[in-house]
Image 1 (cartoon, rainbow, N blue to C red):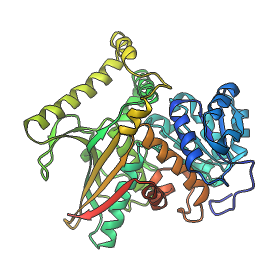
Image 2 (image 1 turned 90 degrees about the vertical axis):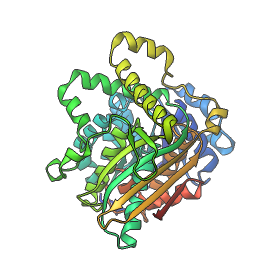
Image 3 (image 1 turned 30 degrees about the vertical axis):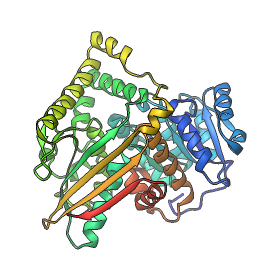
Length: 415
């Protein structure tokens, strides 16, 4: 089946896998409140009792949604699940531990798939094992369909489109900066980080791959010289705004996703495209102190989780999988991001991205829910592609328009 072949009639339209987890519950609630009534949604996970309990908390007609019992390690059940629906969205991580069988099932069944992984090594395995199968079946396998990496990926795409429309040439030096953000890390994100650190410590090749700026490339031999793409590690200063900057915690994932988008589009952003992600500490001496504190905190968490004695201490302090902030805290959260590029012709553009809601919870549930609906309802508008993709290459501006319609902003201006 190709990407253009109409999908056969299936029992469900969209399945939320991992609906009993913290972000899974938020995503199910979002769909219950915002999905069209004609969309046939089902909740999936390994415990029928827990699924039914979650279903009872949902509003209106969602209390009648069917439940599907399937374990992440049961390929037969996952195959049946994938064949029963047109789209699967999954929040079950760490994905390296639980995710590949579901990817394989969806790729084989021609079922579109979206997840929230922030695990480079898992995505590489997914590409290597499922890309060809998904291309043959017509499935769009979309990783990082939440706060990581939708703003990064769609923001750079918006800059590319604006630069092309203005005749400004290809993108060159491009920098993503979290200008302001309020929210917390989820227990699932922490668990994914633990898992990736463990895998890298046990396997030298995995550690080398995770450090490769083009780790998700479709053709490593075709990539530009990676020497200008090293991940930032210390404090720097923005020459245009004067703000002090520190590395963004998910930059080592998002940058690889954006570079994969460039490569999958035939290097449409340019072979001179260079991309990094940072977080602003602000201006002046206090800004420098804040940026330094971010660097120290990142090093402390990564270093602490890498050593058994300190990991035990951090494990008692950090949230466990399935845990998250209160509803009040989620509502107070927000983020504002500026992605700025200088094109090959020397012109500068900025994409300002903003949304309300805790980035890792409320805003991510919106992004994942809209990604699932986009894959389901907008197929005729989407790029005619299949395989293991990125948000920008699988859905592109169609998803951006959806997010704008629900209050997320992607505003591009020439500076």
